[in-house]
Length: 331
Image 1 (cartoon, rainbow, N blue to C red):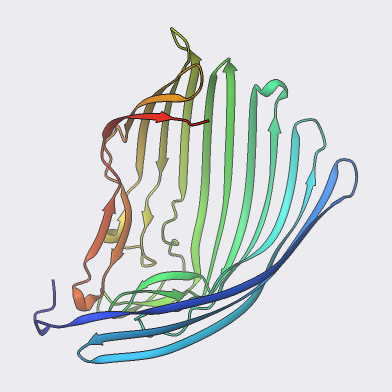
Image 2 (image 1 turned 90 degrees about the vertical axis):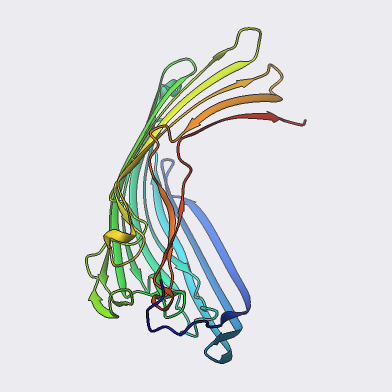
């Protein structure tokens, strides 16, 4: 709700036009060092320019024209080794860039490009005959000028955080113990936090908070999933395929302040499905059940300006539901 001393009625309108122009050049090459070792190098240079013609009417009209331009390079270097049949070992180092931006209607400074330095190493193995395959990877990332969505005086705005980092491990395995049967498992651990960042929380009296150590928005420390699928011949022709999957992730936050009122609790979802495909592979009929554990899952959350009550606008993923789908493939 609006503050008690907020004048009513009031007029609030804003908008504008944003124009973006960009160009880039890119090159990549692979060198076979030996029969089992190769090196890869890729480089990209990009430049972009953005301009905005914006207006705001909130206790009086305001209009402005702004422009900004940036140029950055990105690239990746890596080594790949195949020491034995079915085995791949790799290591990469890369520099990535997310383009800068203008906040139309917010009248705030231009947002600088986000830079990430990422290092990753991993191994993959596929057993002969496809009986099973496994992979594991570890990575470390350092961000500078990380782009985060913050609550502005009148709307959400994109801004730069100072420094952030993440490191994690991912493991995946698929087993095919019998014809038509596959069991897949994945698990990941992620430590993603701000290293240096202070910001004002306009929902809490405009207080300045030191956010070093807080988790990055929309990141969970743990995630796991399991998938079982089985395909067999259907009576009368065609095939039947049954699938079951369960995914779980630990809690995550929607803002950099990591507050309980902008958080998704740890949640797991169970989905089941059964699909029939005709012998000509043109018609499919599927029956499915989604979110069978009937969990409350927040898909996204936006928080409006404190001047407008700091209301949380939330979109929820569908609750437990069932359905039937019919498809036809034109050849």
